[in-house]
Length: 372
Ligand code: PEP
Ligand code: MN
Image (cartoon, rainbow, N blue to C red):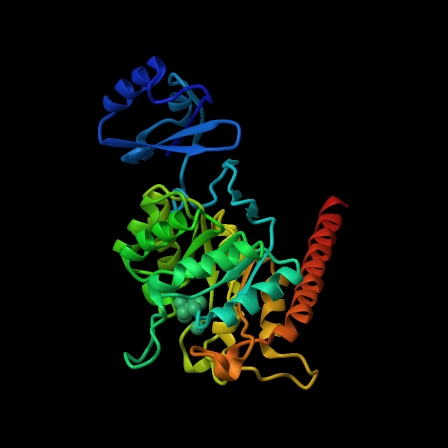
């Protein structure tokens, strides 16, 4: 159960102290406070944990300082979508809006290689009106002999180049807690020329200690990939780890499942789950068509499978697209086979726009049908 407090009931107020005493007196109930700083006001919420089924919603709503009560019916207590739960779920990060009503494209390099490639990529993004990108510095690779990413050494110049070309958010995978500090340190040293969205990859979806560390910091949002070999429920619980530690600026990203049933694609596409995640949770839902499809094959219609997969996710309501591009895919150090070229960037963005428009028209059609 969640108690949403009146806007002026802050933890150092006498009303809060009174409320706390009453909550302490409830048998079998523990509670913890969460504060969400909005642009205008601070929202204070209290999470009641334990035997909450015995509590009466009206009794709890009558407690001092309580504005509303949300009875949590699903396992995803913080990120889940509950009955009568009208808490806002969208967020603004470094001037970019994320939410279930938004759509952001993160086109960029799977792995940072040379400053020339990074700069060429950023320049193309700026020319295409883009303010987000993906840049992998820490790469989890199948083989220990494969390129592991430049790590912390490349962060200052990657962030500076991002700033130079007006990029506001860089999605960057981390594989251990120390990477968070390295990113914070590099952002600080370079004077915050850009923002970073921490990415937790499919191999780490259930790395609970990493999730807790990423959740403890609330400065950077987190993009969590769905685990490629676990259930959707298990992956959504992983997202809840981030929120339960304090960071609820979480984007959930579908990226396909590891199964030979997906052949000849690299993974079995799971974008049919876009509406499912949007229904079960309040998280914006991303799709990664590059790591799902993994090839540059195209259909008899001339359209690349990656474009088709992207459109499938967007027409179902996806809110973010994470996609690999490279100025010279033949020489990319990681995943060149699935990289789109810079010449394809305007085409890709136009295809995204068409699919998004089709999604809007589908929603409008549904609303018209519901109103007659
Ligand atoms: C990536 O986005 O670079 C990546 C490794 O993706 P995933 O974790 O989904 O395999
Ligand atoms: Mn990759």
